[in-house]
Length: 378
Image (tube, rainbow, N blue to C red; front, top):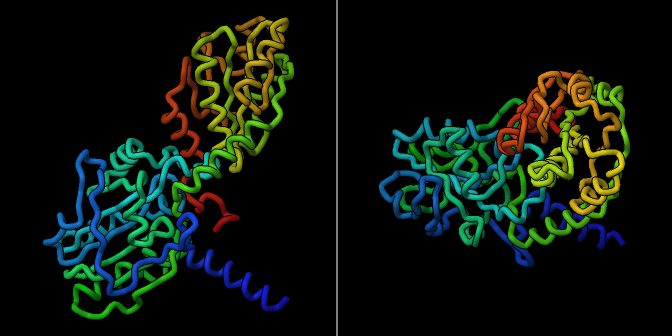
């Protein structure tokens, strides 16, 4: 029994502190002294970048990072600072996203407005003003595998002969006080011609989303699709209470109808938002303005699209009164969407189909992008 427990503990430690899993095979970060594997990857600038493009640089820093991970987002400014601090000292920095977008579950995107596809990487690079190359390896993941990227962010620093001299984290804390600037210390040592004081450190962050994990993402959708879908009625007083939002949740309210083409087109996308953010105190409430006699039709549509939100059918046909109860700025057409903070403040309102990126930005703008916004995760 004790032997089995020790074996199990060893496996757990490997996963927690090594995380070296690539499908059925093990992924191990490059050994110190190993040569930098070549790469030829598309970047957000519309062209491919190779390892040899940076031959003239005295040092090469390869940072595996991504869009969706809260830890990676917490380090974006620090990655930009590394680049800015050393770009004029003969140090090149290249960022690579290792993740396969289909392998990222919706509920793993609760801290982001963007997924890990190349088009979304282009948006993030523009929003964050990345001055360094940001490359995509998500389709084949051969580069991530060759380097042994086990999490985002994960740093590999190579000397002028492109031998690995440092592998690990950027520093020792994503949200607490930083005590060791491991990557910068490694760069400083190499620039001074000295050995790196600590050549390997543990990494922390989101595990690499290998393509094999896409099956888990698919099964998650199947599980969500099996959740019960209901449709209750609500009167104007109930709508008024919804608008007050006397809860701790961020509340997204969408007014829709089965006879409204844009409504039925966007509702599944809004449902995805619920699946993304609900672990963080977010809820989707739908208000159908179908005639009460058409309640079954509305419920059938909700079931067909697996909208397991808080669904209501409004019993009043007085749309002016409905607007006054929910949001007096609603001009009348459907769909209409409002994002209500706890206490009733409307953070976002939109008539017609929403711009999903704009809405996600409003949601994450309130909830926060990193664990610094979640005291229990610090």
